[in-house]
Amino acid sequence: MKLESIKLRTLANHRVAGQHDGRKQDKVFSMIRAWLDLPPAGIFASLALLYFGMLVILAVVTFRSPLTRPLQSLNGIVAPFYGSVAILFALLTSFLANDISERDRLALRSVQIEASELRNVHTLSVASVSDMRNIRAALKAYVTSTVSDEWPAMGAMRLSPRTTAAYDELLRQISQPGIARASGTAVHAALLSAAVRAGTARNDRLALATDHTSDLKWLVVIVLGLFTQVAIGLVHLERQRSFIAALVLFSCAVVVTLGTMALQEYPFDGALQLSPAPIQALQSLSD
Image (cartoon, rainbow, N blue to C red; front, top):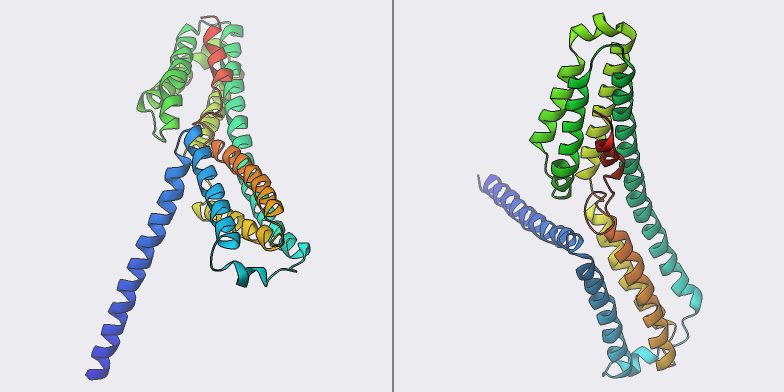
């Protein structure tokens, strides 16, 4: 009985420790996400504060603290040592940038495909011998709702019930059985195919709007940037001005690079968000 109670107590302690660690991880990741949600000025200011603050700390510790003499004894570390840390930072930064650019590329492609298929629906409705004014009206309503309602909702990572209802109405109009009798089965099938492909592109667009890069990747890249600053400092211990100049240059490059990447984290939100222009242009089509 004593052994079982000890096991149960140990298991309970492990669970409590695991929950505590999980809460800590959630706080760290929520901080990364909160940083990415900042306006452009806030993103760049946060990075500048972090990396230039680290620069000041390293400079003070290295040249104006009781640790100066012990640190100076490390003088002689060769430049290739810095290169090994910098290469790891560069590799992970490039992987992170590739994830972001690939998501942006897919988002742009989904918008272009959706606009193209909607234009096909309009062209077929105009070229058909039967009157399809109802389809064009439903198409215009869907386009207007997408631009005015769904685009801002995507920036806030929300869905737009109004746009969903507009798309359902467009499908309902295109699915009318009378179209096949009046314009032919081939035209009706082409209209349905174009509308379905537009809906598929819209679903891809909505999925990409709520997608984001792993917070762990961002955290690792940011921390590796700090380690790279330390590595740069270790190969410039003998000269204070060289030490500061090298760290200032690297810090500026990191702030610009990571800040620009952070601005592109969300394809449909922020200063560099994708424009609804390809779909918005459909509003000028004839009725």
